[in-house]
Amino acid sequence: MAGYTIRSIFDLAVEALSAEYQSDEAISAVRILLEHHLQAERYAELLRPQAPVARPDADALLLSLRRLCAHEPLQYVLGCAHFMGMELEVDARALIPRPETEELVLWAQQSAHGLPCSSLLDVGTGSGCIAVALARLLPGMEVHALDVSPSALALAERNARRCDVAVQLHHHDILAAEPFAAGPFGMLVSNPPYVLERERALMRPNVLLHEPAVALFVPDADPLLFYRAIAHRARSGLLVGGGAMLFEINEAQGQAVCDLLRGCGFVRVELRRDLFGKERMVRCFAPPAWA
Ligand code: GLN
Image 1 (tube, protein in one colour):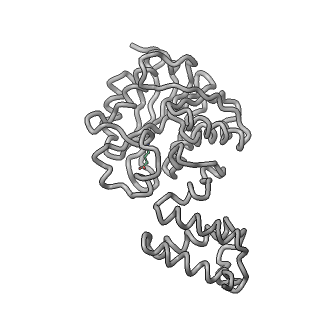
Image 2 (cartoon, rainbow, N blue to C red):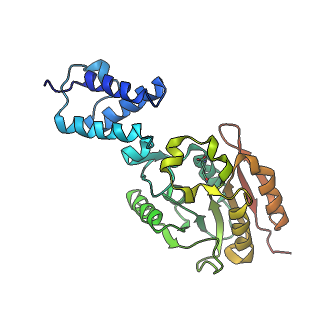
Image 3 (cartoon, rainbow, N blue to C red):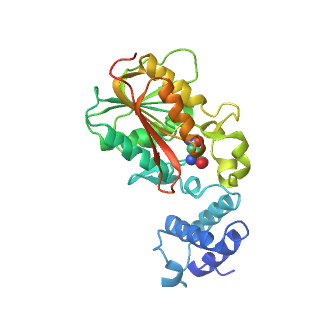
């Protein structure tokens, strides 16, 4: 049997994916797979349609294709995702970094000027994307990150090393009764789980079947579970007076999160929309001294 050419494998792959994906999505995913497995140029199927594809490359590409057909996210299949200009390693141990979270990182960067102390803690770091990005953007900052999942921490450690930054990683459950051993910090940042169980029905299979549920979901009965826990710990000594706290939030919980923070005594509480126009981030500050 004649081997594959770039064009023949492109056509076959697009055809296979179009059962599960829209045609523009299928075409762009296949172009990315060709780049990844063959080191081909983007549009190689047009530039060099008849170029032969070596058997091992074709096999690897077809394996990736099977993973995509099973709705595994493209970033997991490739093993990497782009975030804040960095290429991070990603797999099923942690959520894929989202573009909204880049906006949170930029806001945290802007908030770092004039803090009472140059240290920050990322609560629920997952892949480490927030902590690693802030360590790169804020060279004088001592960066810590915690996560409940040891396997996510192992991934975050690889990402810190890969991006050549120092992040001190801690295994800790922010919902646990025992206090977190390090700190206090000048800034707390968190993108905690905030998707309600009842929102599962609205989610795509690539997220639902493959991304870690522990990083996504909160009980319907307690949407602010993590915000309350973090705010209480911030108040009881994790955040210094005058320190900043930034959260990514569920778009439906903006006012509720702001009310919670004001109720806990935080000041200058501010809600921001993301690039999709959704209320997605909140920043607040600890007062200089708690009342
Ligand atoms: N934005 C993510 C999503 O919609 C959720 C992130 C989170 O729960 N912190 O899939």
